[in-house]
Length: 276
Image (cartoon, rainbow, N blue to C red; front, side, top):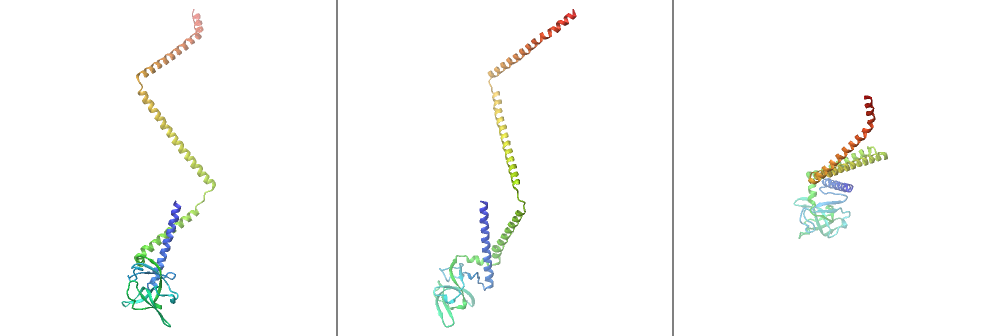
């Protein structure tokens, strides 16, 4: 289970790293290309007006692609192009509703899906930035806009990447230490197993001895209590038995003394004769 979690964590970490790198490239490339990020010919665009609703909405992120041959564009395609609005050169994304061709130039009449009139100025071939691929990420433009700021870039890109590299450095050092650590031989492993078995058996013996002691104590306690609670009749019987045993012992002692007297008798008679 731990190994599976470790693999999942490593995969997620690498995915986040790749995303961070991609976003970093997009942010830097947009700063160098008049605000147009370009990644292998694909350009993410943040929708900033409602002129194309309901196709896409404000703060949606749309993906456009570079146009290799301007003549491949046709009516109905959605293109992003440079135009002049309120005296400023800005990006605009509208649908082609007409194409004007002459001998040397091509221009496109555009209109927003949410507008009733065509745009005032046509989009010339040199103004076209890219063609919408049909990919739209709802509200993801806010994320790109935040990541484009210094605060967002530091929090979401710099810190995670630093943590990732620190973690990888820790893993690298741990691997080196593991390689340098001496490996156990088969004899060492057998010795460790033997010691573990001995410790286990000793613990089992201690547990068994403790259990026997507790059982003996449990058996002794009731017997003492039972002796205290014995009726008087039983105590009298025990006293009679003790008396009988005592009498038997005394008789045996006296008999042993009597048997010893004849053995001394000759010596006494000899003494009497000497006295006479």
